Image 1 (tube, one colour):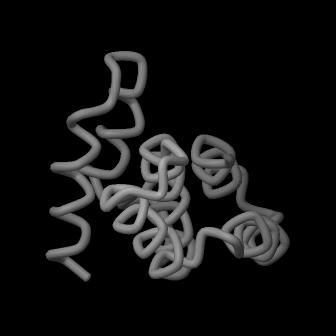
Image 2: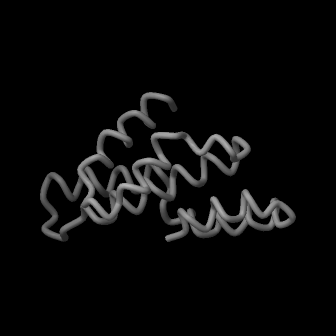
Length: 103
């Protein structure tokens, strides 16, 4: 997982300047979150990045992006964020961090 996080952090460095906060959050590893919520938050940031890389030409890069989206289970991130919000509904700090990464 650590190598995947480093790879994602490096990839996120290519985002536009307005996305610097997302890079900072991924690079910091969401230390305030419990492990389960942290994993979902990191996946959400990665999914946001990779979905922006998809251009629809069915070329090699689209195939790579599609593989990453599947690997990250991006289709389930919204559900997983809801699950984490329900689990930590009484912890405003965790809820605020999860809101930052909501797609």
